[in-house]
Image 1 (tube, rainbow, N blue to C red):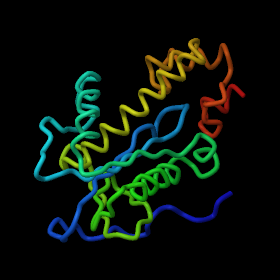
Image 2 (image 1 turned 90 degrees about the horizontal axis):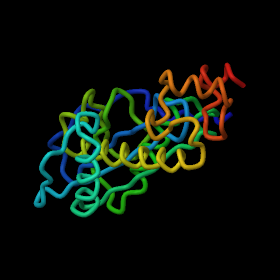
Image 3 (image 1 turned 120 degrees about the vertical axis):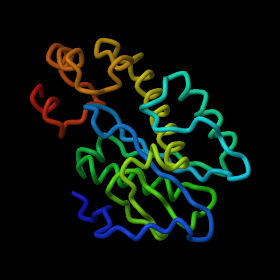
Length: 204
């Protein structure tokens, strides 16, 4: 078991006026019973704004796909990272999420002066950071990160569906729907199921 916590003990004071580049960070896939948790970090270009950014959950799949391409093309830089199923089972889902977020920030080509993270927890970073509840609906860079993370994970689920079509990953995206739970009981767990999550553990 890895002993280091990826959670900072205290949140910083919000510093909207801090100089330098600002990165937004969000994740997708904390709740599902299978697959990695995906995080993204985005530094937007203030001189090249992107219209229609919002919490990814409030957008249609088609709109998310279009914005995904726009963000990749027009942001100053962006980074997508993940924590694997094995890391989720080893660390727990919260610490794995924070690890994925840290990896996303470290993967940015440009180093931000500050980082704004959706939610109420922060990964360990060497820059000023602030956690913002519902930040994916309030901060455009976090909205952009939420879109990159969700589209990336949804596409991963589509690929997993080709390997294990009997689970229905293309529909439920790994969440514990009645369809998914029934498939788990009928077929057991596949290698991408999270063993530490109780509905999976119960069928093993």
